[in-house]
Amino acid sequence: MKLLDIGEVADRAGLPASALRYYEEIGLISSASRHGLRRQFPPEVLLQLKLIAMGKAAGFSLEAIAGMFGRDGTPNIDRQDMHSRAEALDRQIRELSVLRDLLRHVAECPAPSHLECPTFKRLANLAGRRGRSDAGRRLRKQPRA
Image: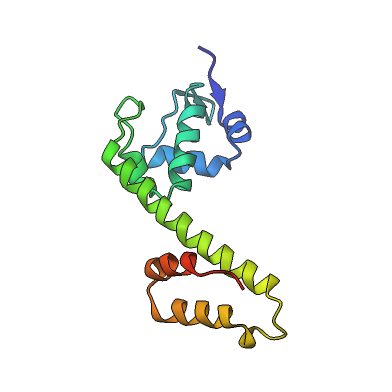
């Protein structure tokens, strides 16, 4: 098995070497040996780093991600946690879609002033009165001016 030097892993993963040292310190990854003072990693670390990056992008903390790996570094993922995170992302996507639609309406509204636009006023009132998710449901139902 050819080991990868920490510099090569950092380059291929697009991470600073300090992040790799930190990930090793908290138990997310493990070096196989050292060549002088430089850590050497097995090639599988690149897949682990991709999984860590996906977990971070999905909003998991490094502590939660560490709990997703078994002692041998293989994934040990709680499927219910994944379902819960996917549902949270779905909510966020809906909220961001509503915000996108509101911004587009503001950009394309033919009214001389947004304060004169009845759709803008209605959307602003809904957004101001309701919580994010409730406003999101209502904003999507509103016709465009």
